[in-house]
Image 1 (cartoon, helix red, strand yellow):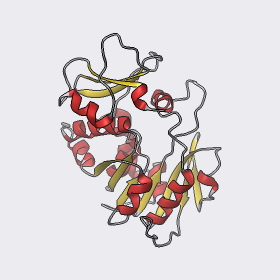
Image 2 (image 1 turned 45 degrees about the horizontal axis):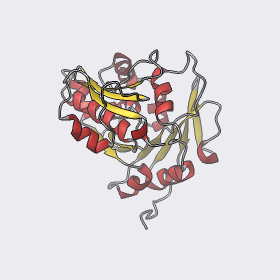
Image 3 (image 1 turned 90 degrees about the horizontal axis):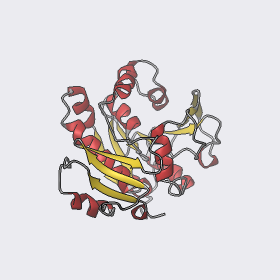
Image 4 (image 1 turned 90 degrees about the vertical axis):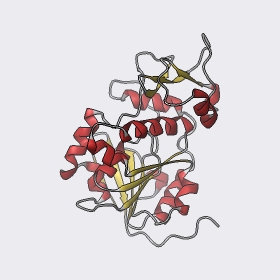
Length: 265
């Protein structure tokens, strides 16, 4: 499904950091016209880029916010057994190369960067890439030194990680995958940003899972970590080395990796 048929772009209060036609050209999203119906509105307000599903006003608008208090709480817990960092095998290591191959809103990538990793984020959706890019732009200008420092270790790329990972040098120690969870009923337990992303990316996720995992396993030098719903089968049916379970999700960990083949051939 073409995002351009669903999404329109607007600057609601003149706070966009550059002329809106530039973002329209980069994303392929048409500018919003007055009284024009659309399913999603990508818009600038108070200097931030937001997205809202127009048919679901109760869900509200979302943005990428690396100064969010909940994210700060997770960052401060990095010396405790935060599940993602434990699954990644991170303790006191600094500066190891990591790939977040399905970046989404970048929250887990921020946590990995908070632990000292140099994180390359791949996002193939132009809409999510634009939201991430805006979030990183604001983080780079943050009054909080910790936010600026962490953001400086996050390197965003637009494109499919299956094609992009084999071209990276050096190879990443760790590849992290968080494919979009299967669409679920609209319940209070489903966070609003997950609901919106499920609707926005419907039909674009779950593709080429086997190839995604195979590429990650071939490119990572130490381990691959995959986030899954707690009761779901392993990604692409491939059994992990071990798993760490939480209340609603788990991390499947693949270790004992072999040197990469040249996947660009």
